[in-house]
Image 1 (cartoon, rainbow, N blue to C red):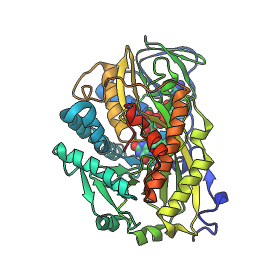
Image 2: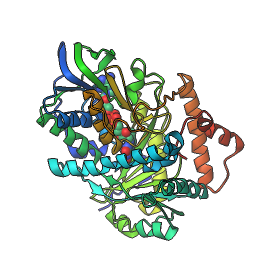
Image 3: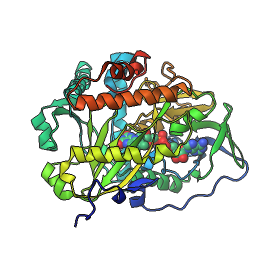
Length: 470
Ligand SMILES: Cc1cc2nc3c(=O)[nH]c(=O)nc-3n(C[C@H](O)[C@H](O)[C@H](O)COP(=O)(O)OP(=O)(O)OC[C@H]3O[C@@H](n4cnc5c(N)ncnc54)[C@H](O)[C@@H]3O)c2cc1C
């Protein structure tokens, strides 16, 4: 029975810090904070996907290694437990990769990124974790002529690498066959899946604990020395090697201040609407993203809900945690309004939940892994971390054990350094650019060319050598 409150009704939409996925996955009992001094072979700071996959792969590579994981809050309660659940590769980034590292190395990275999609599915099967893993190709859809043109960039780049099946153009009719929502056309990315993100994060947490990995929650690390010493509120942790896996707060650590910027993304969720999905013919479980720079992304759930996200939230300042990056009613309202614009069939249906979280924006749009002394880092997923964090965990585990192989030689590891501008310039500039991108996306959706000032400001990142999508 549909909820009587209409989808456009603000009162019906509950803004939650942790989102519906974590509510659905159920509560966890926190592990104890670390007390006093401690030591480990490898200390992992941060227990999102990246930290937990690193811990998991460390144990796979060396079952005897003593791994200690610290998290400032609860494991998996950051973006890892509340994202859109798209499990993606880096094929979409091939145009950027070719520019930066050439065709051969771009191909290596794109192929290696498939490990996440396959590996997460296999891991869920092997460990008996029901994370709602569903393999399905991703639809990249266009809602304007400008987006149609940008879709071709990825298609052409894959073809140029000799991998034309990885991203293929779709006609408007072919898109309509998969989801009849008036899209102008698009493309399909062959290798991808969806998960219930919190079930995956908490499944990883549970399996890590069962494997004897030590996890202490509610233990923020305040400082990190290159010698492998971490300072917490209650003491020091000494480790042979440290893995820094703290996502958008990386920039708060010494030496990482210019490593990335912070933006935010917000999701809204409908009540179950299986009849609407049936009418749209959107029953194949395909994740869908449009071609905007500040993209819309949408997927379905097994009980027939639509989760709909918008990547246009506010900018963060440095590596600070700010409430508006987590719960921003204004950004959530835009996402809700856009959802109704995309799917007018939802009129009269209830949008039940809204939530958000920070995004670690890489200067190159690509995740970055590497080492500084005994500290090994991973950050910069730029809104695509679910699949790539699996590969990231494999890389960081190898770096921490000093086992070099073809994964540690990938172009994502210790890439040519590219830095973000310092604060407050980064925040002020990022905020102005974000506003221009919102205006440019809206103008193009309305079939208009953005005005010259908007074009100038929206084009600034490229002129500064920074890459945003499109
Ligand atoms: C709304 C939203 C939607 C998204 N949708 C998608 C999607 O559909 N597909 C996709 O691929 N990606 C998506 N992403 C991005 C994805 O969620 C992230 O890239 C991914 O979860 C990053 O994992 P992580 O382990 O690096 O970070 P996190 O999950 O943020 O984990 C980092 C952990 O570090 C801890 N920490 C931070 N500072 C400290 C400290 N000083 N000491 C100790 N611990 C600390 C935090 O508490 C946290 O648990 C989305 C993100 C958001 C916000």
